[in-house]
Length: 247
Image 1 (cartoon, rainbow, N blue to C red):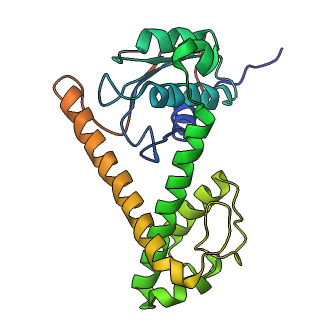
Image 2: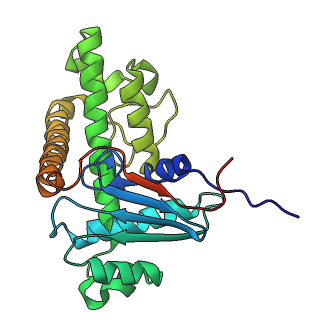
């Protein structure tokens, strides 16, 4: 007799933590977008929520479909159901997810833009922001000036937190993560000429500030929307009603 391996609630939350808001570049678990997780004998049902009912439908669909994909990789999870709550397109998105219809199958003629192109745009922005954070932290730590930036390699960056984040974003857009690779590169991995770096660094800083500002704004909207009825925190409500439990 074969014993069926069951996933744990931690497995589910860790899988959801790999899903990011494409515009805010943060895990949906940290943003409080995972409303609840219910484990039953059939599998798992996850409810997502967003800061407003009119958040961009393509962003909403991306996060919901990425959640579905991430959860399906969890061993022993059973059937996966992901539902988006309180959005003006909730019904359409939830039907599309349940049918595995894909973005175009869900939105039909409304799906004018490619989600992969949209995802690529925000991944490149996330890389710019991470690169600026890493370089700014490095200059602050070492006292070096901007004239040294064009010589910096990944091996030179000393902030473990910023370096880890930068490597993840470089990997996401297909850039080298070799320690000897230049830090300041364009989206294709090409080094930037020293004279062009100050202007491009200011642009990267503006992108980073925009992402951080949007994140702060969305957290405020989410708190305003739900705080009267539900506590806003990083941890979703977890209900484990399985008759068989994770050992």
